[in-house]
Length: 126
Image 1: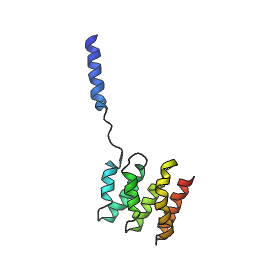
Image 2: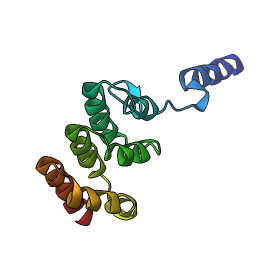
Image 3: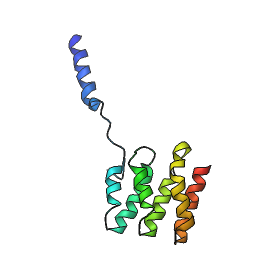
Image 4: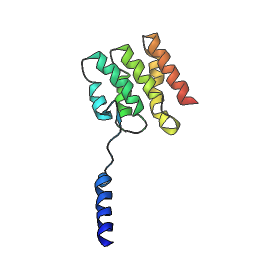
């Protein structure tokens, strides 16, 4: 009986991964990876990164600052995707991104970006 209990304990430790939880991911990549991609010259990758970070914005602290910075990207679609991704915030954390979204809504030269910012602000204000 003692031998079975000992083996059961070993199985629990091995199967449980010793208590380490893998970092949250989107598209098989971490927020840190997508945040780095936002700095790449490939616009298609930056657009994808701004979208992928949306699913991580509530669970990984790297996502929010990267998305706020992406609101200043030279590509309108990157800015719009970042605004949409920031729109998933709710409660107290939403207040952290509202000033950046309001500025985008008021000053961005692209109508689609302004609209994306307005929708994100609306979601955060609910």
